Image (cartoon, rainbow, N blue to C red):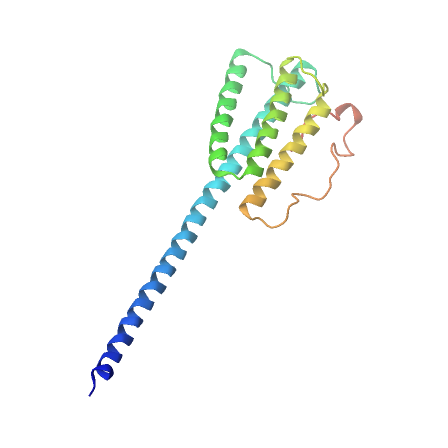
Length: 189
């Protein structure tokens, strides 16, 4: 038996072992990437959801302050007592902290939409508190701007998360047609 015929099976075994190691390493790396992707997707989903909830909660409270000041109409006014203003400050600080997570985990479109949403939310706050603003000066206009900014943020977040579809809902008029005209400026989801 020649040396070549004896070495051939050993070379085959060595090549098989190398191929097996390479395939195993590639599979391990792909699995690790999938696990990391799922891990970050879950964190991004939580960050987007918590932030959207905090913004919605603040907009509701600002609307109630605006009702108390007579800026808009509605059935649940919130008087701007010291305790209420402290709660609002704490809620705003919480929203701001949640925004930091967005800047770390969100994509450029979602982060840009979040900044625009912040501006629209702060506009509602200023109107509710009676702080002079420029541009849009009425509650209904500012609230519509807020709703559009919120919709843009949710669409961008859905896109970043890979959620199918870009629309959250079909065109639904706001305020709803059943609402009397003297209540057209109040909030909604």
